[in-house]
Length: 470
Image (cartoon, rainbow, N blue to C red):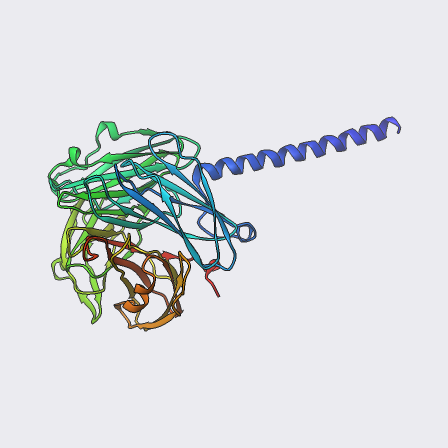
């Protein structure tokens, strides 16, 4: 090899090494950014070939409490999951499991702290995830919610209270490998300005940690306390956890980023006492209106007509409902809403609802044990009927009932067949429409002598279009 050939060979090797180094740097940067901001919510061509993602579950807990993560796979291939408990200290060792196609698994989660949270990562397919919590240690009640599909730098959490018979918390989790820095601001009905405690300003949350913030000492006596979480560094996931002195718990995930322009808030089988919580963190009043979609069609909510929010405030409006129903609330820009319902005993349910209907959902159970009275509500906000087929994603062995199909009339809410739900009350259900879109939720009773001690409402989990079973 002459001098020129040697020089060309060295140049070629140098270009190759530079290319390898560039690829390595890009890959490391991508991994770092993924860890910082969390998984992307949309499904791209790359994720179809190697799908992965995570659910973030700020469920909270307490001494003697139990929480189960419910993970359902509506697809046709097994999905690997990794479950990691997060709290104020070191994360728990991850647990790896396989969710078989068309089934659900329940995974016990650490729940000994108010700040208890869990991350569910999935690989090789898509799964739905949610939590089911049973209070203990002198407290009672059942709470259920879907986990959050992504973290955010901004969360609105309407459902909170600091009345003397309530003990409410804000649960914030940082599931990533870098610190998060955020500020918590509270909004109420009576106080003329938002509340930002100095100790809740620029809170530093370490990687893979979660923290609980008790609302009562800051806003004692306020019937409505809504929270805004603004992150300056990193992203977090957040929810509220409410405890009632007479007995009962409820949890409600936050609304990320900018709230939807309309919210659909399902509920059912309660005692008819419903609260619509309206959080307006903006600096301008906003006109309000809402409609109840029940079995007999839409009805306007009279006490909201010609009313408006106060700027930078949060207020609760009592609403009378009967049977399966949904509150449809066109949200003014920047305003977030939630619905609280009361069970026939002292337990409550809560949801921030759905911004848009979808064609296919996984409805995770809201039953914590036997005896039970499982329930499900299906909401059709459109002007044409929709036909929905329900089929089980069983969590255990045994006979699986045949799917059932029902029609949901236009602009109304209906209950799923009782005989179908009672066959496997603690299993997830795949709900898919053959025409149109809808919004489902589980609304169930369980435990106690007559099976009505615990009441929980849990919104369904919309299936991304790329993963809807065919």
